[in-house]
Image (cartoon, rainbow over all chains, first blue to last red; front, side, top):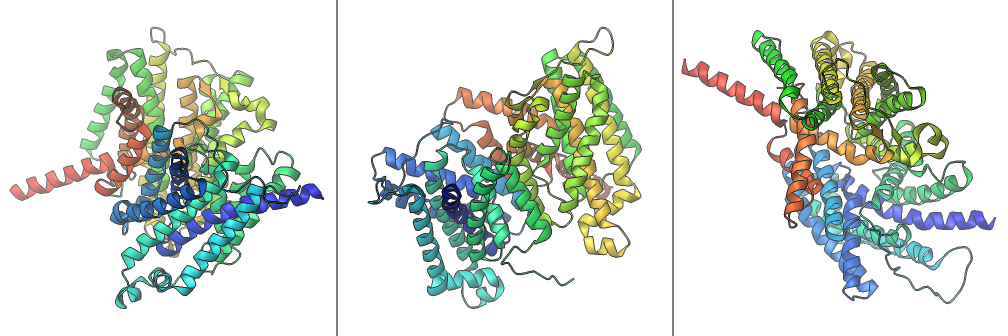
Length: 291
Length: 330
């Protein structure tokens, strides 16, 4: 029973990281109807920025906040400079641009920081003042921090004028433009936010999987799986989906023979399964299209 | 521009000249260069598969590395464990890839555009791990992969590399002709109608589900044959050669050559073999130049901005412009 609880709690911790990535993916999807395949590599790059800042002597928390801020700016710039020219291009062209970004970030990280695996410090102290055999301090901190971040994001969209404007721009760009919202900048803002949420995920997962340029491939896949499971049209659903996927991953790894070796295949099965049997996800709206 | 060219005497003449030129190449260059050209042609065949699927049928795949792996491993396992004749493995690899592609096409039916891209992305990312799976290690060789011999020369007097070059050339020409015939047939028009307007296509009585899955299978088959040929060329398979970056490579080649074209795949294949080497030389010589992959990525994005129709698309556009101009001048 202890093992089961340990697995579940660790799954929740990992799952909350997937939630971050899933939320970042859903955010861009809601605004533009596109999956940003570069989301994982952008988060990885942000994590390297944080690692560099720590190396320069910054306290871990300061490095974390700075990296998240830098990611926000980078996200805005990427939208304005790289993604905007293909805004109205066919889907294929846009997907290819995202893949181009993925490749650039991956190669650039390998070039700047090399492909050797680096340890990354945890944001949380080893000693929390109490001991538990069920969950480690980093995992507990991850759950708490991501819940905090998610609450912040929720509050931002629910209670601020900018958040409302962003929702309006995503829901109905034409009408939003008519009431004076700059839809283009709202998109850029969305990219910025997605990049910083992704960065939180990257920095939290780095102490677990170690820092290297390919560390986010699996995480992004699980993030996608979580987003789809929860429903790509529902941010709350995506968060829940991420948590569920994290827990399932751990259970499958432990209880299904061969499961620990085939974690990515499990994500593949999950993605295809959701798309085939419940394409709208658990909490998503079913989109009906007029012919 | 998004239809294959009609057959004209000029087209046939050009095609014949290109094949003749290709036939003398191995006698003009070193064995190593022939080997590189063989690799380029193997890539070209894979790109042909991707073009049929994405360019002509409008279905995305960023997971064609997986079908390449199916073809490569089928050939390698038959060669390594059963000591088959090299060329006998090609049809089996083609069939295996077709089967996997067709099966993957079934769920893909319900997925449009982006979702299909996502599912194939997952397939590409999961493939290396599947190939390393313990239970299959006896067959796949696990992380180490499998070594296989190069095929013996078919004709005396040719080197192994030259012989393989001719075989690959023949396979590529054959498969290009098949693709051309397919796309010019009734089925080909159905395939393109589904891309242009799926609803109109189905009201015209086209069985979209059957056509889409079959196209997926055919596309995978082409890519599988390419994978098998690549094993003959490199004499080796290992799981990490079939990672997501191979899928990206195939996409780059397809886009560079022109995704809605048949002859464009040759340019795509040549690009994939020679440009990375060239980029690597440059970035080795000048440390401030970013690594080849980053250049690849930049290239991909710039191509989307300026020449989304690729090399062959540019050739066709130039030709059409020239024809218009000379007609106006008359």
